[in-house]
Image (cartoon, rainbow, N blue to C red; front, top):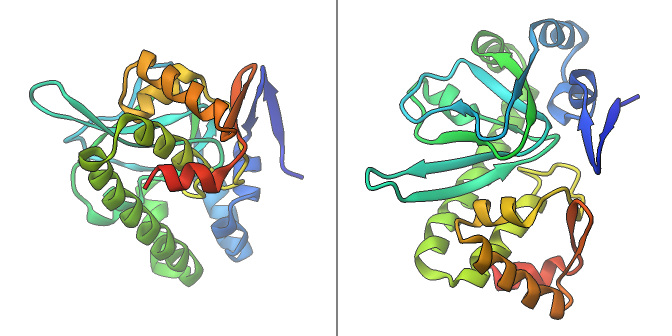
Length: 235
């Protein structure tokens, strides 16, 4: 049984719970699953704390147990471009490990968060000995490439409402939200951070979205009511 822990209005996972619901782990043979579980550790992050800085070597593959992790790039002039966010149940960081090069972006906890960590050695062992794991990585890297390509275009071509819509759509995308849950344990301040817009701009966009029947807000979260409508606005 997948162990889920209620934390306020959000759902958190144990390490065992995250692994049990991860398709790549379920597809492994029994010996490989035992090795992965033995090698997997847990790390807690306070809001605003870095999981990885641009230019650092990365030694772990990450899965989100609780909270939200933001990908971003900060230019020399201080301007920040947000690439996306990772929520509970998602795995990320494979690109940096496969390239065996320093990080090209920053990983920041938007709220108090917990992540599962699989060491680089175990990650590489899975790539060498488990064909199903490589298939998972191929699909995930391909999806992430297309998402990031669209993100580059979005920041140059879209208006602020579309950027907010894209941030919401991104948090429902299987890359960041494998369950596809339409209720996002996300505050409007966190959404503004993911969309790289001001809190005031985000609030105005959300008001328009609510009036259009695209979303509704609840205590502790945002509910996506019309995903196709949001997706059309995000293009």
